[in-house]
Image 1: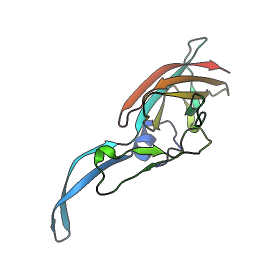
Image 2: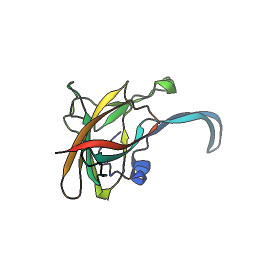
Image 3: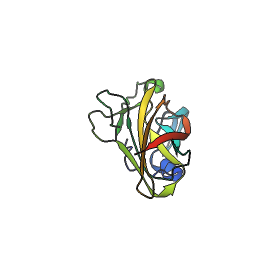
Image 4: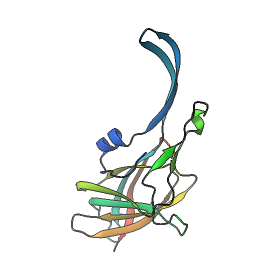
Length: 169
């Protein structure tokens, strides 16, 4: 699964980054036709809607680009997985199928927009508990703003995080 190349739009997110998983069971086969049943499908990522405001002025920030990295001081600070893997076998229960971020990367996740927008949509990996995220936003004038926020991201959820306060650099 690739997370790189997101453009911040809901349309692109829905067509290129909406990874789902489900198991189907064949119930009958006749000539060239197979009938199957599927209990349900589940989304493997978390969809987030972000908007930001200047911490000093309270004005909305028009987002031209957004970078996201893990915050804190751990080994993955200021990085975010560009890719994830999903380990699947025929005997793996659906509840045990999850996207796992590739480790060892040194890049942040960058979302580049074709035009500045007030809100941006991003597909992110679910977290194991609460994590700190570091955001850097660039506006149309080249100004940069940065800050952090804590969140627990659950697979399949839609998280609305609007009005996050960032400091102008």
